[in-house]
Amino acid sequence: MKIVTWNINGIRTFKGGIKKALDLLDADIICFQETKVTRDLLDERTAVVDGYNSYFSFSRGRSGYSGVATFCKDRVAPFAAEEGLTGLLTSHDGSVGCYGDQSQFSMEELQMLDNEGRAVITQHKVMCQNQEKTLTVLNVYCPRADPEKPDRKLFKLQFYRMLQNRAEALLGAGSHVIVLGDVNTSHRPIDHCDPDDLESFEDNPGRKWLNNFLFGKAEGEGLEKEEGDREVGPESQEPGGCGGGKFVDTFRHFHPTRPNAFTCWSTLTGARQTNYGTRIDYIFADRPLAEEHFLSADIMPDVEGSDHCPVQGRLCCSPLQSPRCPPLCTRFMPEFAGRQQKLSRFLVQVGPQEQDALPGSQELGEIRENLRPPADAGSAARIGNVAGRKRGPTKETPAPRGKRIKTHNPPKPQGNLLAFFKPAASQGSRSCFVKGQDGGACPLGFWKAVLHGPPQPPLCKVHQEPCVLRTVRKAGPNMGRRFFVCCRPQGHASNPQARCNFFTWVDKGR
Image 1 (spheres, rainbow, N blue to C red):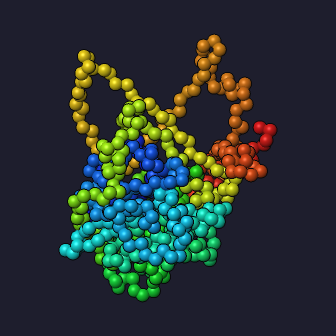
Image 2 (tube, rainbow, N blue to C red):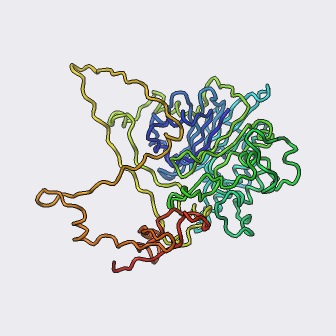
Image 3 (tube, rainbow, N blue to C red):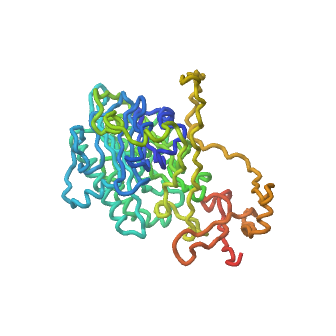
């Protein structure tokens, strides 16, 4: 049984369609975070996928924000499914239950915790060592802590406490539990490309919570062995555990000392090219499940398409299919079940269309929390991604006499996983012309001579390469000012291929 988790930075970014993406990931349970889709924008092609049953949680307050989704192959259909952690969003018979003690939260806090579409829970039946077991999967997208917004720091810690409360309640009821997703905190210095002051590294509230939630050895104990050669068992974690929790970080369980194993990189600075990132995406499992039934766990850094990469885990358990999907399944939504149709289906052509590229998932505050910003312009610049272009539907040639001609094209090869998710190579530079008053074509160089173009970039001091021009987007006295920085991607100071610390303002008169 294989399970995958991935912060996809927008479910509409799968240009080839969600079905092909799911098939190429080739897992029984696939958990996405940051879907950035609300229910009114969810289309049938994404919600109802042949061979899969899906379960969504949507943000109630903001469009294009947060959101998680769990896709299960039909043979792994859950017996119960639920949106949220608190139980307040559950109004059907197919709920998971086991909510634990919620007395530490007010009703308003409980409502807010589930208002942003950050959790979906599915419960499955599996056969492990000839015994039928219950397995509950909590797919979560944990909040980030904005240093400039104390209420968001508190919200993040409350979400962590509620997550632990629910997971331990499910354990207490006899279920195996997997908690996976984007946790938005790097646990140990080994999980961070360039940690700040190591003496205060553990003081981060998110890391303190992880230490309490997880059970594991102190960093650096033991040596990593080849895949499949690691001895696991109750004695492998005794004694000297640095965390007293009930869950295990499955990646570190199999790879306790592997360095530079990151799952998230800043798109603003091109840090993926130099592997200057953090590991904030996890698959946590209760200790007996991790030690007795997990075969492997690993990150998938070669799979592109988001500022995060997927994480996968394999279990020796076999799934037992539910005879019927729980009511939360998207195929039972009225707009997809045939009882009611969206008006838009009658007004627009239904078919695969390219969507606008969505903005990066790691906002500046989120990067500041898990990445040390570049020394040159970290506080000065906030750079957004450039949205892609829409391409309208192609026109269909009408068949004569009202009949549609049916053509049979040979099936295309499925291709491989990495080729599908790798962004398309950029087409070479093109000569750009604009039409003049006489109808002729005028090169852009003419207009640059008439209108002042961008200033000539200086050479950075270390690499002697032309710098790139940036503009300050952050509110403050420097907003709108332009500056030059080294053109190379962000990386560790010891990496000669990474960006140097060159920085210079552009004169206001230029």
